[in-house]
Image (cartoon, rainbow, N blue to C red):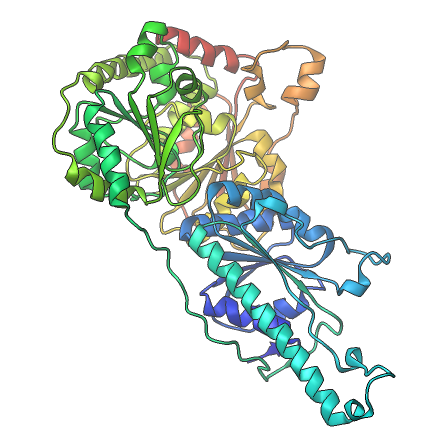
Length: 586
């Protein structure tokens, strides 16, 4: 086995192994050479080289999103780690365990004019769960004896003893900090930062392991059931005639089928699910915007819940946020291990359990189902909305709306769907997806900047084949995502190219002006074809309904190369078609 000669590097690599951090994404550099040497010469680790740091961090995010285990990104000093920030903030708000390990310069080399040197300590501020700033290993010449020290201390033996004692203190500090950071990332499902100063020489290797870390007891997240808390919620539950469960981002198979069915059997409950909830039942309500977009004041009052229970991560639908902020429930309880967002400004209780643990504890104690027409009346509305949607689509010209209707139906069963942000995820929300398709989207900060990199990272470890649906701006913004050697041949990208940020046309403001085109919609005439040629993707395109149907017939077939389908839609009509849809289903 080959190791770096630097004890700090050996300590980091060894403790990552102890904590079972297997996937290491390395952004090439010089200052992080000791770490690169250590990780890449140990077969325990699966190492990836991603040049663009922003892409590297989102790539790592995609892996961690799937595994729900800490994944590390390793970079050199300076601006490199700043490029990790977008993915790290996404990890923070999406509760994904991402570990940033940044190489740094020794303290005496900071702010003296050296290149790639910035103030790295606590650089991510409050967007990480833990900041570990490690100490530099000592060198003998840094431990010179002062002239006024007693002569006895000038002996070689005492000098060595003092040196070893100080190094032991440093080693203890570093081991403790690394252990705390990795433990917190795993237990609290979030990002941490480990900053490591290295002095030159950086490339020296050895076959000897100098360090012997103290054994740590690895911890698992324990769920503590508060019986009194459950009992107090039961009292509210039994008295509520209108119960609403709203489900945001959830991992697939988070809730067992028996609890899903028990919720569905209660006529006083309606369950509103987002596409990213990965939660399905014939009596649940996907397509939230379709249900509530055209309601009047009396309808809203009829829908207003007495009790609101929320599961999962952040919510896409702006309409449900607006509704519940205006027509507040009497009682809002969030169930989840991590933070509870007071999204509707009426949060009363946070039960720190996984949804399945909560339901398996809570539902057996429910003594009766309240008689109610709450669910049945809204199921009737839901059915009417779906029928009207089908009628509307039949009359549509080629447009974003029509394209999403077609491509959503084309996604292979038993696969994974990654969706870009902005209009891509909002259109996807309007359509039903089969239970066998797992859906993911970066909804932590909801940025367009790393959707492709995240999708590629997730495809590396996902058990199912992956398709990404994304908009043109998001795709071109993250085009360096294709610059890696790990993309599975079954990976598919569908780019909806409407020549700009079409979602801005839906928002209030003057449109069809030069100012709007340039600074809001950001008009362009780019195509993904040249990128596909450069990165070895098979490229096909469509700009009408017949072409699209023809291309989709073979798009998912064949495993020689990853493929990209670029669909060109008219930019000037999409906003009106979407707005008219909500008027039509009213």
